[in-house]
Structures are given as structure tokens and as C-alpha cells.
Image (tube, rainbow, N blue to C red; front, side):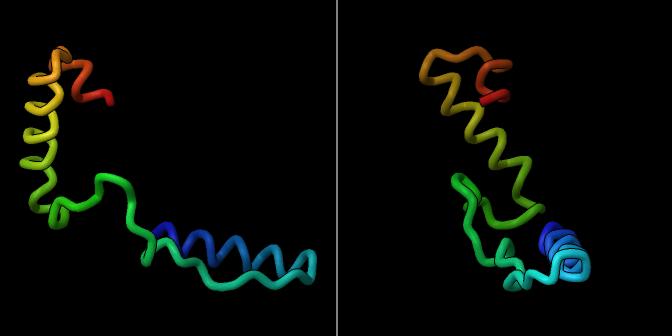
Length: 66
């Protein structure tokens, strides 16, 4: 979805400024910590990372907000 928004904005900028931009590549960029297997595994990923934070001395609230 973000890629479509970026492409839409780039197309509008091209119309108003004449400057062309390459297609968005957000669907090809891996985010740090983004290896959790998709949305159906996200809750488990959050639980796992919260437990890691707790084991390092964070409170649950701190672990969830980092």
C-alpha cells in the first residue's frame, strides 16, 4: 500500500514539476526486525520480542514500546 501512495505522489509531482521519479521499491526493502513470517505470526513475534526485552531487565511496557 505504501508503494502505491509513493507512486501516486511521484506521478503528481511529475505532472506539476516535470521531474520523473523511479517506481517505489518499498515492497523490496526489508525492514529491521521484519522477519516474523507475515501478519498471521505477528502476535507471536511480539510476544517473543517482549519476552526477550523482559529477560534483559525491561518492564513489559518498556519492552513493548521499543
